[in-house]
Image (tube, rainbow, N blue to C red; front, side, top):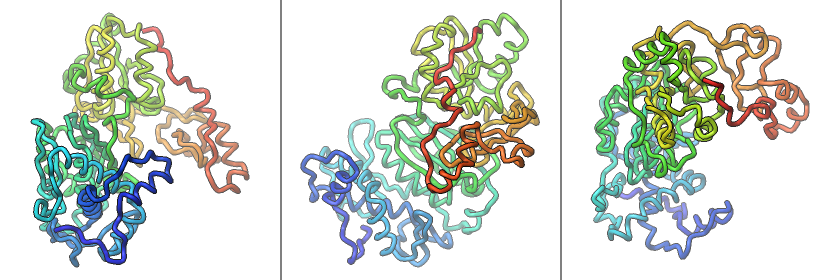
Length: 484
């Protein structure tokens, strides 16, 4: 049944949305049709409300919107009445509703699909394009697990795990998958990040083990992700406390390399090696000088990741983010000529696009990549050729499989690999400062940040200043590879 609008709340319309676009510097649409967009807008609004719904006692069916056994959570607030969540969404989240409206609306004119009560009796029905060019209506609730038999405590406990996964696949309507993922993650009380694009999905989420098991089962049962297996989900100790919040969105790239997926596709990736196969190749490289001369063991991660853990004999590009990787390859292309390249990253996703980009240059003898990344390698070879910690993009910063410490304190030089954020409000750099140096107040990434952090001007202003970090100023954006 359609989600009713509260009588005292004006129905959000395209005209209001156009005013929002004008105020925010967005281009206006040509001749917007309020009448034609009305059903799609109502659907988008209802789906957004649905994504914020939480069962109080775990025995509510997906269709029971507004019942006594549910409430809604949004922006750190809890809403007990449907009228209140409606008002909140209308006041705070119309840009997101508008985006979903357009995703639904654009399939209507081509196929004469009308989102009326007669045609569409469920708030969870979404039109999803099929590969044969037709449109089929799916009920999102069919993609959600039944949690009616699970106690709420089993979904909200402190101890749990973090899942890291990705799947490259063609997604015709990423906004639909985005709505489904938001609803699913909120139902399971997850925090974390999920990126969706037309080339696939990339996620790292945290929650209770009961919830993560349900999530994996639900993912594997979805028609778009049936090529995945349980092995594609990397697990580590953690939970919902490992992330600040839940962020699910649609992006151009499933991992931000800065190259159009239509130009360099994941379908052209390098040869995948299992952890066992990769281990044997690294072992041969370590024991044979000639193989080492003809091979580049390439770390595709950022400098702060490889700094605290890496494979022996690797080449670790001193880049700040993955979007610099293509320029790094171009700058050092001659070094890759006629080489066998062994690539690795945290979970494997960056290597998919990174290896495809390197192969597109047609200079390497062969390009291989570690399937499942360092994460899967450490599960089988905790004392193998990878030494140090594995950096992760959440509040833990790193997980470890061995006791090696390969990094050092940035101030005194003692072995140290525990990151903390720079103490100044305007800087996002990670700092390696040991306990003794922290006690001395050495908490910043560089002298510039340390001085600015101690200045009264920043404290008095109460707001972050422009980043003028010595670290970023001195760092070469695209470093040159040393002779191999």
